[in-house]
Image 1 (cartoon, rainbow, N blue to C red):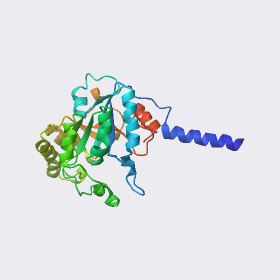
Image 2 (tube, rainbow, N blue to C red):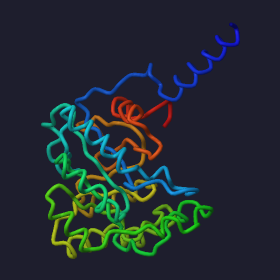
Image 3 (cartoon, rainbow, N blue to C red):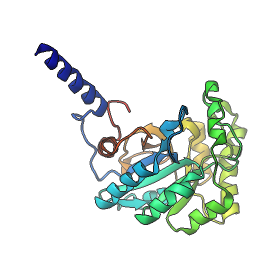
Image 4 (spheres, rainbow, N blue to C red):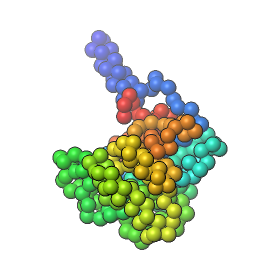
Length: 272
């Protein structure tokens, strides 16, 4: 009997830490910004499966939002309407520009009329950027992932539900660059996107979520309207720095319960 009690206590503690059910939820007047990368099946033995949300799970998540009357906005719309947002406003974002955003994500987004913002790396093909953060990540896995073609980007724009934002020219680690190099990454990416796709590029995302005050100033001076980070959480968008916006990380390891908890709190557990 004591063993059963101890076992139940261990299970209770484990799930309490994993899902942090006792912590405070964030008021629904604060919009949620979700961070995705790939919408694809996991690959056996792959290092970055956390970045891969399966199409099945992705549709479950979008359907849940649709069925529960969340309002889908692009990042630009979120910022432009920040003073008049309804409760349960949400912005879906994708980092990097993977081809599966077009092949797998777009049909699901269309099905539920869900808007999204894709942060595009301009020079994204055959580029190994994961090692720019940690050298041990240089196994070529993300380099081998197919990226969006320019024609696919145009189709995404023509869908009427996708905003294209900037994720710099090459997804370099800004903390390792000179000011001149940073300006090239941040300014030229905006100019390239606007010229290549005949659109306004208003939204920016810091590669790896690594940035400093100098980067923020460059982004502001380049006339972006907002910038997102990889800091986990939910901001009161009326009273926060629009160039350091937190996001809710959606992992390929999250089930629907974890997704629902993250919507409420910004985190699944104590720190994830």
